[in-house]
Figure 1: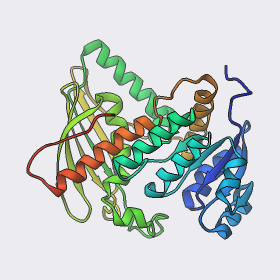
Figure 2: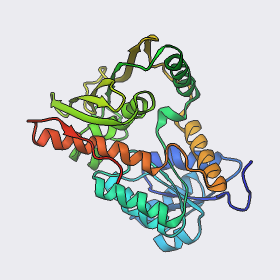
Figure 3: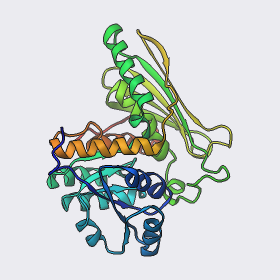
Figure 4: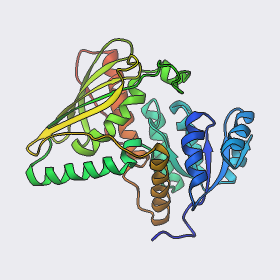
Length: 314
């Protein structure tokens, strides 16, 4: 049971874009146990417009925004998210962050350190891991592994279609300027990490446009592969995963819920972590592990003459 005194109730959204309004803001506004205090972004006019559309008020000043909330949810480019998350954590605000946490390990490590220094709870919103269809499947896969032996391998294909007409992220600068794996990779890794554990080594190769194929060696000896792109042709997108081992071969199911429903569960998880003082499994330290893998992919692609070690948590 959560402690109503220490459970955050006043939430604010850092960000004013499509996802900030339609997922973060909408889920917070509909949540019966929290208050959407408002939005802050670099454009005060857009913050006011987001608040007028969804709820709360637009804050032109970051310090005023932080003073008004118990927790922040962040829907910003990762290179902007990381320093603001660290600043909010050091101000004692609980964190609900997006993937990827950052675009480099130094920035991710600073968020982890700030959360510890600030004594705040944190949760990373990974869409698949907050959907009952997926979490039930993962639990069944763990049971099969316990009964028959660990999973031995898997293939994960995540393909976005950012250039398709009407895609709300078509104008996203950070997605265009960075390897597409930074956007699609965290989804694939969220499942791979759950079933196969930490990644120790990897190799990677480029495909057309931003496509990357990555072979991963996991700590327990399993091997998996990721096929990642954000610029698949229209009609060629989608997410698929298959795992295999002594328990047979199994395909990742589709989930039937909405991102907003999942986000509400993430809010509840953050509130529980804050009230109990027990770190959530999907805290910023776990998000750092994903950044480590993606940073290693970039490192390997820059010098593809040897397998690249994934740096462990310091």
